[in-house]
Image 1 (cartoon, rainbow, N blue to C red):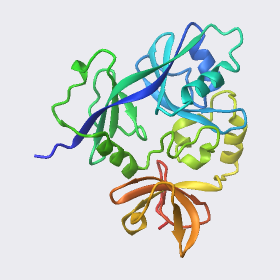
Image 2: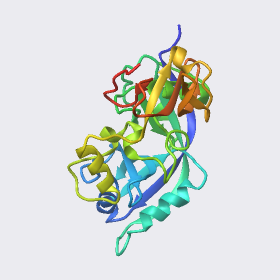
Image 3: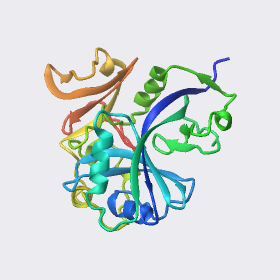
Length: 273
């Protein structure tokens, strides 16, 4: 019988911020509320430049009272860029920032139903429980799941594309992408916390109900036929956007906001096909 949960192991970039001021400092620098994060919990956040462009979409996990980890996809130069950005305003702050590569066990539900939490597990993809990542620092003994089927990373990637989750290096380009274009503002931004670098652009676009010039879309069926990463999205022969990720029968890409094609990516996406 085919198992409903797919599993694979992948490396991810991890920035560890540790010290007495680690939580307070991250709260002042990230778009998400870090002050209320309990030990063992995690949530998504943007690391923005002062002008509001995305440096990285990261998952912030509180691993101990004074230890926080930010994990994201491995992209050339991203570790150095993230460290430089986080160090930029770190004046008289008792916190150290280091980078490493860590392995995670990736568990993905094929039907979108929640996966039972495992020791040390972290929510992923919309935070709806349909994807769980388990850090393998202590080995895989606590991460064994008899209900999962081991697959290639390409199969895990296919699940990501089908649910329309953006990642660094594909849908998000460091220093270029606008938060509002990604479809994850409702997950990665707190609108009730204090100030942080880049907040002005995020707040202004949200208060005006405006979107980025291009928005991330999910395509399937005939709209995904012939899709190639980096190639143009065409409507009646006219270029209206570009594909960013492609798998069998599905594709993701950015499209001019005025064009009605695909499904706008987001937790409350509405089809505009």
